[in-house]
Length: 267
Image 1 (cartoon, rainbow, N blue to C red):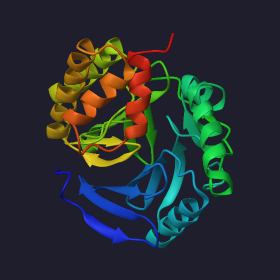
Image 2: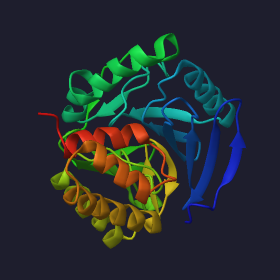
Image 3: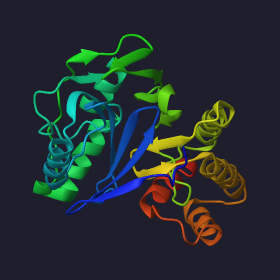
């Protein structure tokens, strides 16, 4: 399954890319919201589950309408990194690990929700759902589709073998990422090299359209380059300038600013 092998459904604000494989459909909803969220729906013969929440009220209404029109009966919402938007499909069972629940309600995820609330105001749904079903093992099945749960310090990634795909929080082959120093860069590279070894067809992330292993290779090269650039710089401003010169067309300057702060923390 190629990342370019999809049909497109244009909505009023967002867009849905629909992929098909082995009798399953992947509906990749590009919200076109202020933080470029992506939400994914996996459908199995009219049954389905949602991976992550839309967090702006207009997108919530739009995706609910799409699901209704498509006749998809949603059996659960899998919430890993994005927990804002609890009005979406209210009453639907919510699945998460205990670590992700903590991340969303009190940890780094909650801090982001508070920041977005201040930045976006009434357009942003800052309500956080209660997790109804904790994921205790490493396998979860919803709508007849098996997922492998890959836990990490913050939340969890998801592998869907039937679609030969993995979901993680961020990739983005032509945009900056939040990299918390050289050690974190090494950790991301090791994770991405695992994707290459596994041979996934698609890599899904919360802030980008579906990507592939060529994009993974591009990201690995970028992360290694970040480390090399940082070694030759004496401070955050010099580092940012050097990275922007090397990658002039990359999006996500706000993420680069955060990365600069991690590599060169203020004393």
